[in-house]
Amino acid sequence: MAVPDSLSVAQARRITLAAQGFADPAPGGATDMRHLRRVLRRLHLIQMDSVNVLQRAHFMPLYSRLGPYPPALLDRAAYRDPRELFEFWGHEASLINVELQPLFRWRMDNARSYAWGGIRRVIEEQPDLVAWVRDEVADRGPVTAAEIEQDVPRKKDNWGWNWSSTKTALEYLFYSGEVTAAERTTSFARRYDLTERVLPKQVIDAPTPDPQDAFRALVGLAARSLGVAAEPELRDYFRLPAAGFKQAVAELIEDRVLLPVTVRGWKGPAYLHHEARLPRRVSAATLVSPFDPLIWERARTERLFDMKYRIEIYVPAEQRLYGYYVLPFLLGDAFAARVDLKADRKAGVLRIPAAWIEPAADQEETAIALAAELRRLAGWLGLGAIAVPDRGDLAGPLTAALKVASVGVP
Image 1: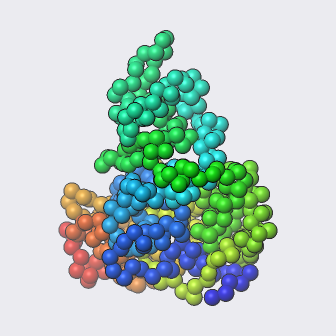
Image 2: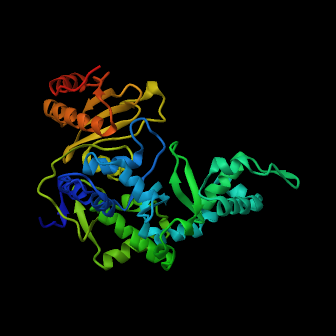
Image 3: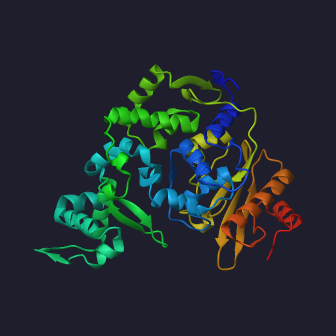
């Protein structure tokens, strides 16, 4: 469908969902690496997070777009040769398509100036420690931070090296691109190695672009992933600095990669990627992680979906509105509900501390669709039963839908 230069919010929403892969057909059979690559080519990176109350954050965006898939496929892409992903600071800690590594070298080259607090103190006050840690990785890698810390010299002349400064030195080397994650342990700790021993040779040997060329490329990739966007989310996608960002946008407009458009109800300019498409409908029915690229920029989420969403992990329990780990439920092209979830792996139960309906959603339709999605999610997580919701204005209808669906209810 042709894209007009003046869009309604509903049209902008469908463009975004299509750009993010929610309008793609689900795999017809077993999911394989081709399906993962299709998603990763759309998103370019996926955010990582250590919270494991349901499932690690980086596994969820693929599930939301593909349905149940073998998580081992993502581990293979990230931590087995030939690497297709690498860990770095893209949008926070991220797994990034490996061919994009040269586009982040400006960030690596400026690690010292970007360094914060403890990292700055270590690299300025303890350069010998940084060199020692790098040599340890070179001699022993892949190695975890804990393994290095066990052997750290406790005294050097008249000053000490300790656990925190050793870990901090390693994080600086990671940020500067000298070391990277060769793999993850079962406890999610990085095993570090020299970058040249981990990434494919063609990536290591690729020329380093001028920073402004890298900014322009990254803004273009962000625009393609978002479909239609305002400047805040274009900049936020790869967490780009203000310097150079405006120039990159202007150059992409001049090159007709970005097409200025009006989204009715939005303040300020919006930009449409020249490859964006506007589907007539989106028929999604899936849960979306708090760390999904679709909802990274919360103000954009509110503009597109009329949903004010905040993750409440760090909010005191008595002050939470919706729950600890709350996932929005995408039904069609709108968020119809939000549900607080926990994987009780010991009991083999998907627990639902709370379930809430969104104001414009149909309660019965949403409950039935959400029950089906929870059954699908539980199966993917290897959980044999789903507990009834503890609270929330969707708890009653969802309980009824779960029972009709013959889902195990302990």
